[in-house]
Structure formats: C-alpha cells, structure tokens
Length: 134
Image 1 (cartoon, rainbow, N blue to C red):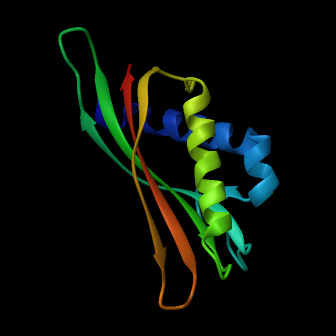
Image 2: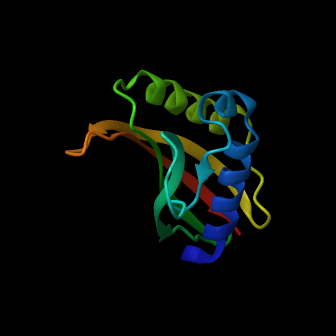
Image 3: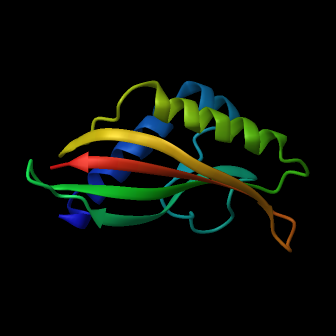
C-alpha cells in the first residue's frame, strides 16, 4: 500500500491549512507544497518531506505517514514562527482530516525544532505522524 494515499493526505493537509483563517491572519495565503519560483514571501508555510511505511494487517491495507510541515521566515525573531506553528498544530488537531481516498485513523504531533540558518533565515520544522487505512 505504502504511497497509495500520500497524495490524498497531502491534499487534505494543504486544504485544511489553506482554509484556516487564524493561520491566514499570520502567514496570509502563503501555504505551499513546493517553494514558489522567484522571490519567496518573508513568512510562509511549506508542506515538506514525507516517509511512508506499510501498516497493513488482517483488517486491510494501511500505512503510517511521517510528514514535515515547516514555517519559514526572514524575521529577526522566532515569535511569529512559533505563533504560526502553534496555529498549524491546532488546525490539524481540531477535527479529523477527510482525504479524497482512504481514511485517517489518527494524526499525532511528534516533534518540532526551531533552527536558524547561516544566512539568517529562521525555520520551525513540525513533525506529524498519520495512520491511514485504504
């Protein structure tokens, strides 16, 4: 099964974050699943890497998805990034995601890490785990 539902999960995450008014009040319409071409905004959300492991069992096909969502900024402070990160967590925790295929059995926050690049950009990586059934 593995990647069978990856696109449906990514679309559900993207749709949820793009429609969240509280997140939009922080980052505007800057939620992406790929870094946009040309100049990037000073603050944006990037749906990033994902790894998938088969979790099928006797009851049917399933998979565990570990995914990353990053908040990126050129701001001098981590505060606005932390506010956006908390809002992302709340948006994904509010109600179950409904992908176009399959079913999300659970979605759990795993970890986060705030980083500063050598170029001065700030980044918070949020890690989530989702269990899906086909």
